[in-house]
Length: 152
Image 1: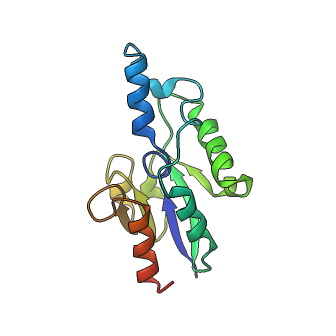
Image 2: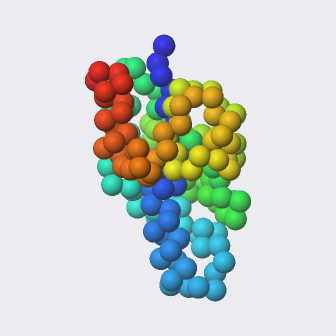
């Protein structure tokens, strides 16, 4: 049976914080820049993220899904996140996209996320790999974890 890996989007696959900060600097009166049209679709990939997803999905022992929470301030975020996946990972990966406000509802082996609570992460029953922090600061460290754990 394949190991299920869920990967968060914002600040794991794509650089949400940089786009948010830039939007605030450019237009400080906008309280929620993520509510602007095309905000999510234009996010830049995090260094190494696309290559890491491609590497993991090619391994026979993993089933990789994208698990992201929607923006409450931008109902179009559902569409924009789906289009981002198609733009960066290809149309075939669209069926691997799950958008849920509660990540703890899903069953799986791993969740790679930049936050550990607030969107159900604390209820996830598998292993949470805290991306962007000391143990897993980047995608190279995530790939190292999986290659050493599974002798890939």
